[in-house]
Amino acid sequence: MSVTFAPHDEAFRQDVRSFIAENYPAELRVANPETDLTKEQSLLWHRILFRAGRLAPHWPKEYGGPGWTTVQQYIWDQETALAGTLPPLAFSVTMVGPVIYTFGNAVQKARFLPRILSGDDWWCQGYSEREAGSDLASLKCKAVRDGDHYIVNGHKIWTTLAQHADWIFCLVRTDVSAKPQRGISFLLIDMTTPGITVRPIITIDGSHEINEIFFEDVRVPAENLIGEENKGWDYAKFLLGNERTSMAGTGHARRALAELKSVAAQERAGGAPLLADADFARQVARTEIDLAALEFTELRMISALSAGRDPGAGASLLKIRGTEVRQRIAELTHRAIGSYGMVLRHELALGHNEPAPGPDYGHTATERYLNTRKLSIYGGSNEIQRNIIAKAVLGL
Image (cartoon, rainbow, N blue to C red):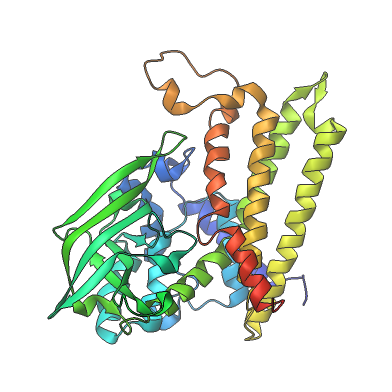
């Protein structure tokens, strides 16, 4: 593997940087895009990328992708993360889109893929349930065939941005007598269908990002079944593999690390910049070394993919280390800011008419710290990922 990019790839990198600088809307640069933006604002960058033919870098060209190489896809992901741009609708583009063009039929591809790319359909994910999170195969949301429809009853939870969604892709149990993984199907459901109720879950940082969804005798056309009945677990594993690979988040981590260093250079400890404190500097250095190691691991996998090799359980490794590094950066940033980092914006909004105390960069530190705790849980907890590595790599 060479860690030096070819001249044409470096030229592509400069093109990406220029495109972002010239086209990214200033109004999207808010503290927490997932909760501070309206639905229409959240779609601005998505639609700019769609019109420019840059929306779905990992999609095959025949389905609307730009036809980039694996290395170009990596560069795009890195540069957009480093620039702090709002990602396109992840559940639409990164998750359900690839499932549809890989396992869906021709009618489903023609119906759903163009609307995913244009942003006309906003998707959410119906996987987790109250007693089926990391142990997803124990899900109980049931779909019973009734002629040309399925009747869906059950519950989903931790559903990100379901309050905006037009469609939800769901794992549902269609055979209660089969082994847990064998009786699951992958169903696409219109969120306007009678019998669907969305209830908000307000998280510890005061934001409304996640929801729970109830299905009561929801009639779903059987034509919305992806692939074969009772084969949904296979499609779910495919989707989660894509999701976990993207969770390395090295570009986001590199940007957050730069912010951490900036904060630590401004904050004081014993009359000197905090970054000059030996113990704190050691922890920052260790985190930077771990991030560099993660980046090299990611590049090895990019090299393998470019050569047509399957990285195997590498997606689990990227997910584990990537989320741990990002959590550590958020924790160190919060520590660096100190007591001013305890400010919560939603609490200040409750009748306060004075400016928030401390520097501006401290006003969202607690929200970011709390929000990053989810990284090691969603997409399959890190404990589950270690079990996958133990079984697939070590043969335990």
